[in-house]
Amino acid sequence: MSPVTLHSICLGQGAGKRPLVMLHGWARNLTMLRPLGELLASECEVHLIDLPGHGRSAEPDGIWGMEDFAKRILGYLDENKLQSVDILGHSFGGKTAIKLAAMAPERINRIVLLNASGLRPRRTFRKRVRFQALAMLRRGVKLVDRWFNLHYFEQWFIPKFASPDYLNAGTIRKTFVRTVNEELTEELRQIRSPVLLLWGEVDTETPVEIAQRMKDLLSDARLVVMSGKGHEPFHGPGAHVCYTHVRPFLFGDEARKEVGAGA
Image 1 (cartoon, helix red, strand yellow):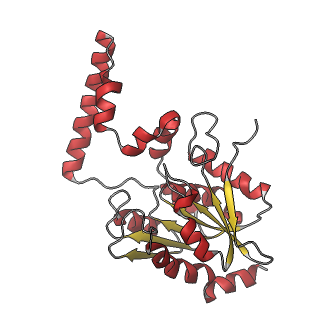
Image 2 (cartoon, one colour):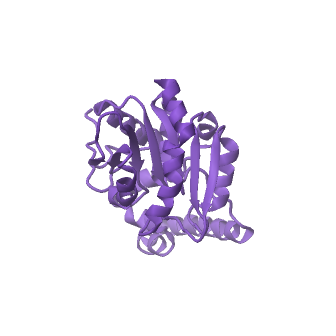
Image 3 (cartoon, helix red, strand yellow):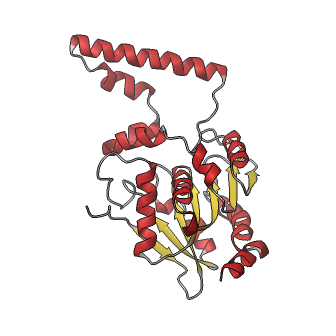
């Protein structure tokens, strides 16, 4: 079976430059991270990739899980003769980076997780009650549909209660459901690469408490919370704010020593 075709853009190519792979979030594409990538391209070779089923990349050939996404990015490294890379992932791209780093630790140097998914948010009591009520309603609507040959679940329940990412998933909706339900606790425990957890303070999709739990699971991690920033902190001037934290982590004295030791 041939691999899913990926669309990518490479910035800052040059002899001796360290490669950095940048992975966007669900229902987004590589253009979201391009402003930050252009800032980083002065010091590294930036590979911006449209994940399968997003942007100009082909759709997954079946119902994919996180391992499938990670394997496809690993294939991209092989195709481009990238023996080891730094990696930056936002949201779902961060989840892919976590899975990849656990699967192929020898290929990953430093990791930036930018408002990454991978752990489920902790629900408040009110949210738990709402979740349980919706689960009961979902089962009831599906039962009525079966009994009376109706389509209330697709025509009423999903449009009213489903998340925007689910509604926008289109033909890869089953892949979205499978991946969103995968928890990467064990993968986080396996990672030994240095990790920068870079988070927006007011993110409601992947709240800061997720970053704090990730930090406890990782062996070598630092957490930076950006004041006033949400789930996509890299928009507009935010790209420069992110750059001021990512650059020293990837290219500061400590990182240079690691590269020298591995040479």
